[in-house]
Length: 153
Image (cartoon, rainbow, N blue to C red; front, side, top):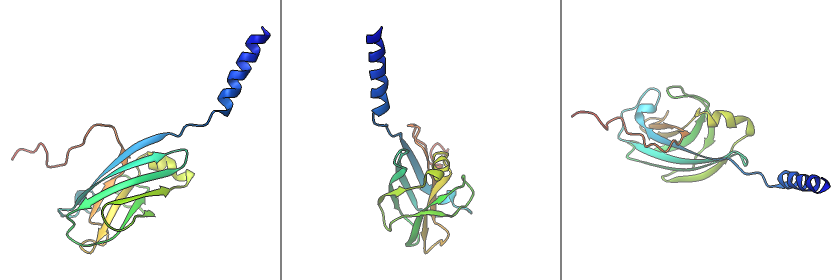
């Protein structure tokens, strides 16, 4: 009996001191003028791959964009708002394409980020409020198709 007790206690202690494993989540964004508020007619487009580490409270991003009518003036991650709603700047992004970096967000912001209430906005000389925008959503592994795919010509 004593042997079982020692074994059970040892197992519990091992679990208690085991390192915590971070939840690593994958998110994406597809950027275009149609998601701007109001929508912007532009050939500009972009995409982003996002990795969120919920233990370290980091959002690692790789963002690509091209074909803007204007010259990029700024880019940000905005929040907290769903599609069709504007929100304030949460994190400034570096200039140019591609954009690669890490945002260390506050713990209190995490639930809204994970809920898909953040978006990427690329501002330009053509549209100061933003030429292309993309909501940051969890990657389901199912490719999404652009609005023009599947349309009868």
